[in-house]
Length: 239
Ligand SMILES: C[S@@+](CC[C@H](N)C(=O)[O-])C[C@H]1O[C@@H](n2cnc3c(N)ncnc32)[C@H](O)[C@@H]1O
Image (cartoon, rainbow, N blue to C red; front, side, top):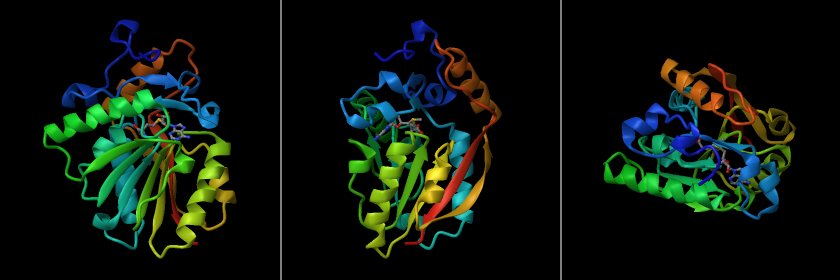
C-alpha cells in the first residue's frame, strides 16, 4: 500500500469513487513512486484529475478545430496513474483509449478499475494500459490526442516532446496535446512544431473542489496545493 492511500490514514474518497465503486482517490508524492527507471526522480506525484476539469478541457478541445472526427483519434493518457482520466475518456466516442504509466502498482490498480468499468457497461471505447516510461511508448497509428496531467518535470517533458516530434513529423495525421496543470509550458514553447490553440483556467466543479481540498489537507508533508481551477493548455503539432 502506498503512503496516503489507506482510509485509516485519513484518506478521503473522491465522490467519483463513491459513485462508481472504483479506486482512484489519494495523493502520492513522486518520491514514493520508485519503479527502478532513471525517470523516477522526475515523477511529480499521483493525483487523479478532477472530472469537471477533464470535461471542461474536452469541450475546449472540440472547439479548437481538430481536423479529424473524435472517432478517428486514439486518446493516450501519458502518466495514467489509477486510470481516472482513462475511465472518463472511455465513455466518449474515441477510436481507442490507451494509458501509459511508469509505476507498476498504479498500473495494476488502473487495470482493476478498467475491468470494473467494463463490467458496469460504462466503457464505450476499448481502453487498456501499458506499464512503461512515457518516452519509450510507441504511439499508435492515426490521429492521437495526448493527455498530460503534469506527470513529470522538464527533463522528461523535453524527451517526450522530442520523441513525439520525431514520430509525428513522418505522419500525415494530427497530434494534439491536452495539458492540465501546465507547469512545463516553457518546454512546449521551446519545442519546434507545437502551436498553442488554447490557454486558460479550467474550473473545478464545487464538488471536485471540495473533494480535492480535503485530499490535499491530508498530506503529511503539505507539499502540494489545489485551487478552484487548473491552468491548462491545448497544443497542436504542425510539423
Ligand atoms: C498527476 S498523475 C495523473 C494521473 C491520471 N492522468 C489522471 O489524470 O487521473 C501523474 C502520473 O504520471 C505518472 N508518471 C510520472 N512519470 C512518468 C513517466 N516517465 N512515464 C509514465 N508515467 C509517468 C505518475 O506515476 C502518475 O501516476
